[in-house]
Length: 323
Image 1 (cartoon, rainbow, N blue to C red):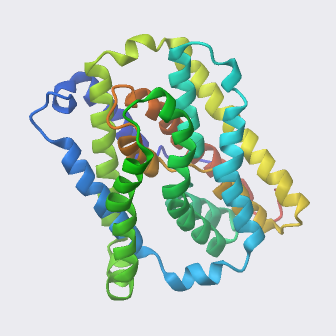
Image 2 (cartoon, one colour; image 1 turned 30 degrees about the vertical axis):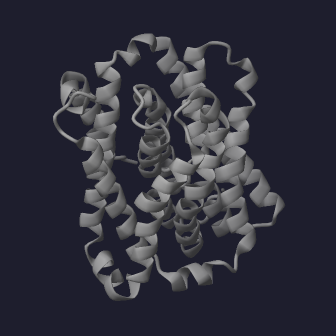
């Protein structure tokens, strides 16, 4: 069975290398206002996101409430609680930064595109996957800042939850609402040019990643990150994924879900959105120098979740094989 390396992952690795070689363009002293460009890009991403959301499909998807509840509880409760268990063992400020990066990963919503694609390959419940992946992003606008506010309030004197929500309202929620309002007029057009919109989304994400890492490299933030730290981060990412994957599988069985619903619960309930991660990091951490470290776990998780779920999805494509 052959697997192709995701082009977006290659692009992420490349842009981090570019940030390392040419950090000045993304540093705080850069003549280019990348923050403004990124903010405009974020608003357009969520406007197009709203355009592609079908209110009819969202209403129809509400019927399978047990499945939806499990996916959202897994995404916004199980993930953060697992990471919270390790907080008492964190002693140094450096390790606190790494832990906070993991907690940020844990508090993020699920990703849309890869969840639906993988569920489709595995022959799971596709309508439920579309509903959960879509609604997760909207829930994350409210829940992710609440989780992060518990710790950023203490560690960052500039953190103001009210200001954060105003930014999320203007840059994220209002564009989504506008997109939903215009769905009946432009929804088909958005679907027709979906691949171009996806390319635009990824371009904005790469810009934010470049800015984040360029700032970190320019201020030598990664000098404190040893090779052993990176190995530990990778191992913890893998452990976190499998913990949630097996927990959602056990709960799905206990609830009596059929094969299709179990697949959707495990695939959607274990995903985390790199798109939301990069966007929320820009708003929540306000372009702090440590943003490069903050984004490390979600970037590694993004690559790993695509790799391992694609393997599982291909194995499940044959309905004879048990989950």
